[in-house]
Length: 469
Length: 81
Image (tube, rainbow over all chains, first blue to last red; front, side, top):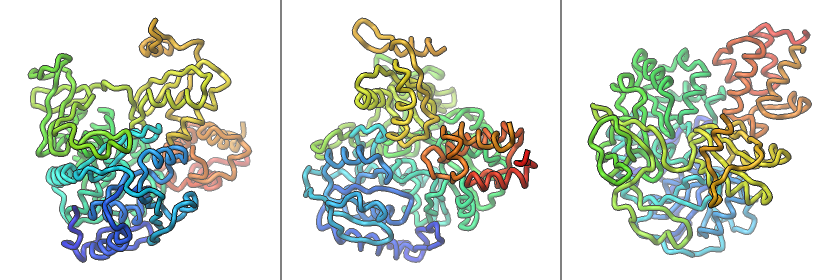
């Protein structure tokens, strides 16, 4: 996949402690790791924005070993569930948590990461096209994975490189986890062109992040809507960041007000602000709003990326031709992934989508052909950029509190959890925050007398919202 | 309410903790004090003391103690009151 040797002396990685690793060294690290894995197999890569995690990802892909990318602080119970469901041959983990896997043998250790051998040996067949596995809403414990092919990653990477005009002078700083498709796409594109990555586990609210940003002269970063809300609160518009060239936004719809503010700031300060849209199911990106249109078309997620095509369909599946008409968004392109896996046997499956993705998002386009997301067909929310499925959250709560009636609804960054027992209020809030790893303030637990249902026993979510109003 | 009580209360509300646990807290000591929680904390402090914090102070506020120092030195909050 990645021809690391091509860029030899270019700096690939700058770590938190100012270690600079060039492409040649990086390639050597990758090879020293993967030489320990004799054949194509499944590996879990427990990710942090650290070099050991990145060496795993790139090394595995380059050697046709299939990684499933998971966050390193995934809830233990959920991790065990994934291990038992997919039975990987190895796991690559930060060394400080390797003791959690005392039954697995240590095969290799370097860069504060440890490669551990599980008792499993090619338990499930891997389709030859399969390159990488990512979770959709891993935080709620669903085993559902997106199957990405080598072709998918290459097509999407090339397309992003083209529309962002990336070259080897770029230096992105990480603001998103690498087990998250948007974070990963930033890594993919930069390593593709021989550019540099500043890898940091520090966040926007930490002084160290901004020192690294300035000291290592970062040229770009990406953010979900919540990132931009935080930047706004941080008085970002008054910051002096001479090295910054552009910022991207994806992972949910940014409020039109913030879109306009950041677009204006970018224009006045000779920077670029690029709003994009995508899904893990499309590898990463499907659209972008070109920087020069950012202000004029604020609120829009733009046009299809190079090599991609959008259309809208109505409820009967007919193509919508008139502007300002809402329909379901359909995307076609080489980055449309193979499909899902729900169990080990599914890893043998081939391409189930044939380049066409029915997104589940409702959209419209204006007279100039720019697209706008207006809603969502499926029952999930984006919380701080993470997809959280409402039905799965309900199942998770009901499984843990068997006597409890529960229904979940809400808006992005704010889930409403309706329950019928006052005594469980705090417990439910703590439980769901712990399971998802998301800040508890995103979940509001509301106690009501009973959950409104129809005669067939289905929850009437519309009525719930009325109770609340 | 004294300034120290107001200050402690900002932490109690942002992280749903007991007042007695506040003074020892540092950023990321508990799950609730992540970047999202930090934003909530800053909002609470700004409201409680009717101030607008500068970027450098927001990102420097890495512990309960550090916050007291910042507020008293830069925003004239007297914790003896």
